[in-house]
Picture 1: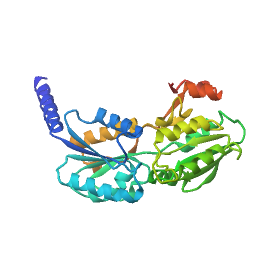
Picture 2 (picture 1 turned 135 degrees about the horizontal axis):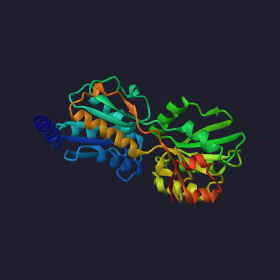
Picture 3 (picture 1 turned 180 degrees about the vertical axis):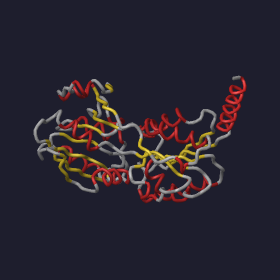
Picture 4 (picture 1 turned 90 degrees about the horizontal axis):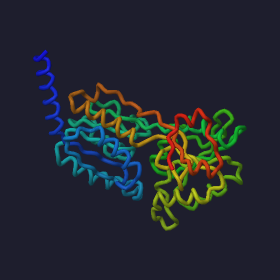
Length: 327
């Protein structure tokens, strides 16, 4: 028994020592202040080895013009290639798109997360040094369960997105690029905009055009008429104050008082936590090729108590029993 305990402690010590010597580069597609990045980083740091040396890089592709994205990726590439890393983590689609192909089949293990498109589209699969976590927004599932809260008969839903690469990826994967479809009795129309004025107009006209509800998708790259990026918090606050119909969400960062009512939403924290666990397995010796790409937790019902009351919506007992309630 003592021999087994000694062997176990030796293995544990060796693993801890290896982790303490690990260097991890985390490349974020967006900016540090973005709520998605903050929650994603929290999930990652909670599950990555405590003793590892970690460095973050931010491509800031939500706020900067698309024409500048490749140059920003090139600058980050020059920095990361100048050092030896135990592991590189690529967060979200733009990091995967611009840096994934340069890292494919290289000596450094890579974990990606928050990927909305198929990894094959970015050349990340198959690759012996890569694996990760796929982000699959629960658009259809959320639509089915939420729309009946507003209209139990034939329901017409508008989904609003910006024209970012991430939005394009979500539309491609979830709706096969279609702008209109029927989910049973639910009629769905999807619109994408680059300019804030057009996005706002679509929301203001929703009720007049027969929509019972609006889903606020991604809105983080909208620009004003002068081409200036509009802060995402400002966009969402305006939508909350001016919407003529109840508004729901697909991601948890858009739920709360002064935001949307909620829905069956995805969490960046879950994405980060799942990716961090994969990273630990790789650092402990498991080859990336032995770990198949996976999806994170299947999402949760999350609602704002204030916004439910504001719109006079009562949750069915079955949904309320499993829902996370926020202010």
